[in-house]
Length: 228
Image 1: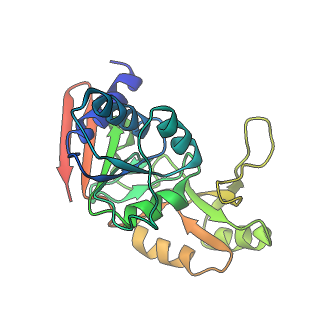
Image 2: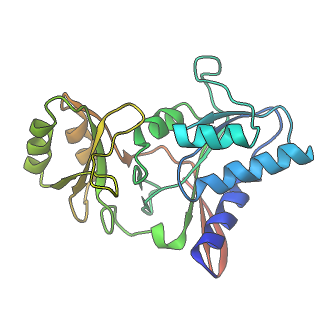
């Protein structure tokens, strides 16, 4: 079974947790987008009603608008019933690395506002330790970003400022830069998260510690549902 089909299966399984009348966080990325499309389908069929979505990125907002999903904001609805989002890596504690798509700041704001954060992945994203395959994305303000690079390097990272495919700098929806920080295997993600967080000029990092409630994993052997 191809990877796209696995992603779709995981996302559509997570949509089964949504009930009519809910405020729903719409995650960013190639797996979570399947959930957004499934929600739109169920709304169109009348199987879901009175759903309000809060997108995790400008890209997802445009997709949701094109699918005619009613949208709201955290100002009008500060508590989200359920968010369905993806991840770059997930460890056995359901801690995550996110931000491969560059939306980590909005994703974390939405996750923290959610009663239930459901993460959907294919089996390739499940690892024994964070940092196995992915660098940690760190969002930094452009002013003085070189000093943040030096700080992250001092913590033990090999740092790459993210670029677009055409070689220009990648900017987030908030017009910040992303530093992809390769630490290798991370023995204590929570401690590293704290060290990154305290630095002025660093807006947010892609370590999502203690935020996921559910994990849906799709593999060739079927769907697995794990709880925190």
